[in-house]
Length: 200
Image (cartoon, rainbow, N blue to C red; front, side):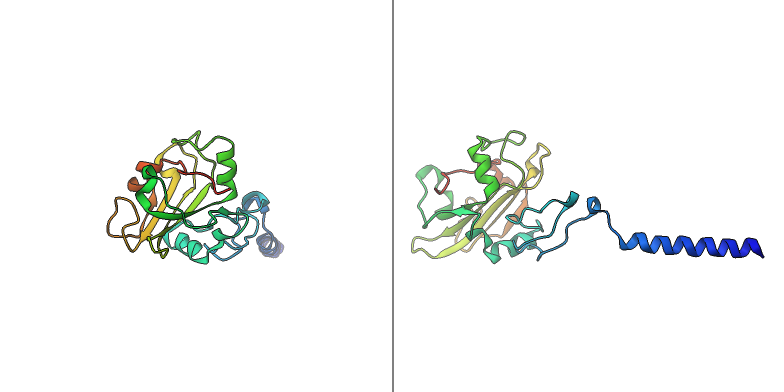
């Protein structure tokens, strides 16, 4: 009888302790789920208790990236962007008239000389640019973006995205949307490098 009561008491004590531990969380194990997914809004702390980078989408799926772009947070500080639509030079005219925005990580990365074709020595993790595409009347016809999401030393370190109603996605004539890690049509020219001047 004593053994059965002791065993029952031990089980109940173990269950109570487990419930208490479940109510606590180790900050190092947190996934940082605050904020609206892909909205570019404020997020809570991520892994290790640090602050997540709010200048990049928290959801890098196609839907998450599209939601981030639709929210338009890239048009506001701390991002920097062209003051007006510009016509690229002949050598960079594959997208037509554009307006380009860079997040702070991309700006710092370029300032540090990391804007090179390649992976390990290229732009820093979370470097991102958004390129609005316009026709010759000044009407926006599409949008493109690319973001470094990993540092594995291969083409899939970068996610590319482009959609356009009038063939502004370079060699892709049906307008898209095009999305993917290491997307060949985008990587062919960019290769992890931001082409064109910083808008300063």
